[in-house]
Structure formats: structure tokens, C-alpha cells
Length: 216
Length: 222
Image (cartoon, rainbow over all chains, first blue to last red; front, side, top):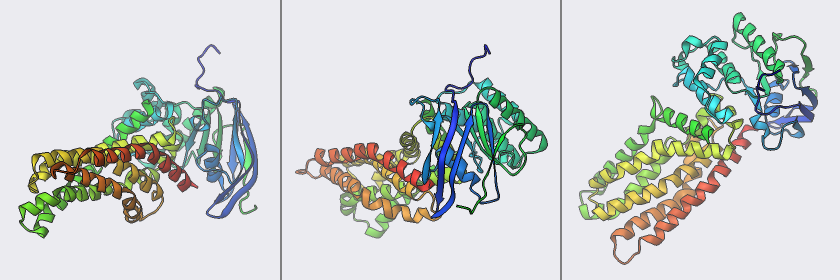
């Protein structure tokens, strides 16, 4: 444990109390409570439309909950919640006109607030198996490769809370295994993650939260 | 600051790169300014008199052209979610995006103005005055436009709605801009008061518009 801590800010726990979300006048879910401690993972399951993505967006602070609150325990006030979370959504937030490396370099600098070293970016691309494609325009990537570029952001700009929405969508078996290793590494370093998924995730020992949908 | 600079550079690169559409505004500006003399007729005196107004109307319309993509493009590819959880607060993110948009689309209009002024037989003082007012006034157009862009980011045909929202708010900018430019050539009217009003409007929008646009973006996410 002589290694320098990976995250600029450590978080003890992510908590949500009595969370409700309303979108377009429809109550998507209500009365959701959850707590994930550092090093822990929570898998959110449920049928289509049950509100998995909405739950992650509320946890990320992208949409305000109709009721309840999301609390990150352990972080000081200097670090607002938005600077602690990674939100990997349905869309990959990749600019097709820019190269793979430029996309990642921007995201890393923007999320971390300082420029990432070139070898760190290269390492992040290597980890997701895009090492040889750094100078390719991102528009030429396949869906799975774009997804991997989005995942490389998680590595290039370390943040303690990962909110992953269908992280394995469009990934091949090898990439899924790599993602599993990344998740395990993240948890071992004291991070925590919440993932919404249909497919079984390549990590062991995760708590589960079942959203039933419609029941509100 | 690093984060904002990175965003500024990315947006500028995207706007100036292929398909960014930064040149469209200048071309439109050129079209407006060249078409008016054909409609008005070859009366050089008249053209010189209404020249500042023509240039301002052209610049105003041209600066509205690419605005609807300011946040819409980021929303469509998911980048907006990234911008919402970034290191800097959202209002500063809006400011950085507006600054990049102005450098890519507003500044070229200012640079083109002295050349287009020649089409309208403007006197040298009038050319300097119009260029100066546009330099000070166009940032306000972009900033107020950013509010409209944020409000319409989630609408499919927002590009049509945006001018309707933005134009009434930016009319004072044009009134003071043309007023100052006219005052520079007509003798009794002083140049400075309308010019300072223009500068005040720009400074106020510099502070207020990013906050309003950030609130509109958050509301659009709900």
C-alpha cells in the first residue's frame, strides 16, 4: 500500500435515500434507496423502461430527482459531486471528426482539470485495445471500438465513482474480459461502481438492485 | 482553466475543421451585403448613408446561422453529459463554448467588414466605426444566442425557433451599434454614448448569459 492513491478525492460511500424520478410527467421510479461503499459494486437490473438509465443519470447529477437526495459520503465540499463521477451513457460522446487520441485527450483534460501526460493517454488506449488506432479519425471506428474509446476515459481521468449504463453493449468477448479486469482494478483501488445491465457483468460479488418498473 | 482551454480548443478545432461550417456565416454576410445594392439601386450617397445599417443587419443574421448547433451537436452525440460532469462549473463551460463559437464565426465577420464596406462606398471613418462597433457588439450576439441555443438544444427544429427567441433580445445591440456607427460620420451626434451602451450590453451579457444558458441546459435534461 505504498502506492500513491489513484483518486484525487477518496469517497467512502455513495448513498441515495428515497429517490424518485419523474420524466415527462411519468413517475419512472420512486422510493429507491441504495448505498454502495468504497470497493463495492451494485448491479441494477430490470426490464426495459424500468428506469435503470434514469437512476444512473440521477446518481450522476445529470437530472434532478423529483424526491430524495444523492449523497457522496467522505468527499469534502471543495469537490462537488459532478467532479467525482464518471457517467458512461448510451451515447459514447465521441466526436467523429477528431482522432481517437484527440477525443481522449480532451475528455481527460476536461474531466481532470489538467492535461494528461501522453504516456498516460497511450496507456489508457492500450488497456482498451485501441493502442494502434490513436491517429485514426474517431468516425471510422466501429460501434464496439467507440464504446472502448468511451471506456478509455474511465482510465485516463481517474474518478472514484463509476456509473455504467450497459457497459458491455457492443463489446466483443475479449473486450468484455478487459472491462471486467478494469472494474476489478477500480474496486481494488478504492473506487465504487453502479452498473445497469441485462447481461451478467464480468465481476464477482456485486450487490443487486432490481427495478420492477411501472410499480410506483 | 486547463479544462476550459481544452474545451475552447476542441470547439474551435471542430468549428474550423471539415463540416464545422465556420465559413457559412461569412459567405452569408457577403451575400446580404452584395444583394442590397442591387435592390436599392446604384445610388452611392444612399448606400453610404444606410451602409452601417446594412452591415449590422447582415452581421446580425449571419451570427444567428450556426448557433442552433452550439449545444445540439453535443447533446446528440452524448458529449453534453460529459460537459455536465466536467471539472469546471456549467456556466463557465457555456462561456468557453460561446468564446470558441465567436472566434470561429463572429470574429471573421468583423474581419470581413472593412472589405465589404468598400462595396457600400463608406467613408474611412465610417469603416473604422462600423468595424469597431461590430467588434464590441458581436460577442453579445453570440452570448445571448447561447441562451436561445440552450433553450432549443432538445428540440428537433430548434433552428427555426432560435431567431424568434434571440432577435428581440439583441435588437438593442443593433440599435446602439448602428447608432454609434452613424454618429461617427454625422457631425453633431456624439459617437461615445451609444458605443458605451453597446459595450455595457456586451459586458452584461458576458456575466448573465452563461448563467441563463446553463440553467436552460439543466432544465432541458429533465
